[in-house]
Length: 119
Image (cartoon, rainbow, N blue to C red):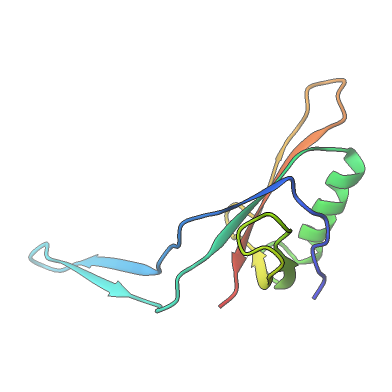
């Protein structure tokens, strides 16, 4: 389990999500099912504009975890929500690694990672 050590510029904790499924019966009556009792907690790690080397470090970590497959330890940096608390997380299935390519002639990449807390 490889830790994510590069500190982001800022962290955004998303509102909790709940694993709920809805189905419609024959009379168009909707039935709601709660599939899990635990809230899904997600964190957006915003790195702003980083160098090519830092971008490669972040991307290598994402690739090393096989995207959202493997979990790892992440400690929320000081001055953020739940600062200094270590969590076991994995990358979000749909939004785990996001990157904005710089304009031609620039060497700074805007990187955002989305982590999901493992219950």
